[in-house]
Image: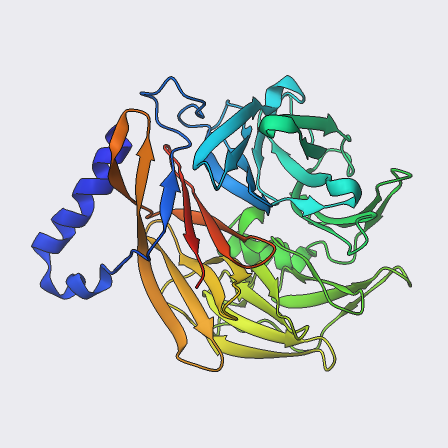
Length: 400
């Protein structure tokens, strides 16, 4: 419970020591918001064990929330299913029961045909280095989790980003640590690898000079526009577009928005497609939101939601606002929204939702300080956030 103690005491210490910081501690407590207990060690209910429950992938499918975690070194990750209406975890599954040697599921989940979901894994770093794998995930009756191992698409590498096409017939991904773009045909299992987007010698040298690793400069998210082109970022602050029909890659002339001298930190960490087809993205290096017009291939910098790096997740709500998670360790992540036709950026602060579960029937206020994942339900009614801590919970709020 040490982590829970820190979550409660540290904000109080900061507030008593520094008056000006008071304005930074805004807590977001919308009506009908709630937290679902996913991982606390003092319960006989279905829960995830400590240090194996950092929620790094989320997907909302009807009433069900599917989550994937990242574990500490030497431990294996989990999958879990929770119910929004019942406000509880229905099932959990240790990934090592299907694939050994894996550390995390950080790609998110993308949808294929027949409601099957797909994700990619990163392997543990050790002397018996294994590659990451593609996995197919199904949710059965009662939230039962079914996992199928589809193998390693890129020899010796993990999977850092993954996307399915609109038809659910093909997957697109970025390998780790090489940063190679690949396609995977779900029916034939055929893989094609493209080296054009992988970091070149100069880009690797620049990254070395900045003392950063592949997790900082590789493309972390992909998106497909209405015409079928797939977009991602490359080391060196550029955006690429893959044409699935021509099987070719082109690079956009406009770079990612960045602060001068920090271009090496350019990395698309999240995408969200607006109803009008425009693509909104987050640059992790300086925490800037931008919009890409697929018709003109031009990028517009919209600015920073808060004065920190990272922009970890983006999703549109049914109110037309773009919600996102900005910032992160060693500071706190903040929930924000961007309203193009209204207030622009609004920093909502740290979510504080009531959590009720067996053993805590009276309810406790759970504050989300390290949130790294956000997913919207298909109708945009619910926003589901996942924590990235030793004891991580789900935090859910309805969009009015």
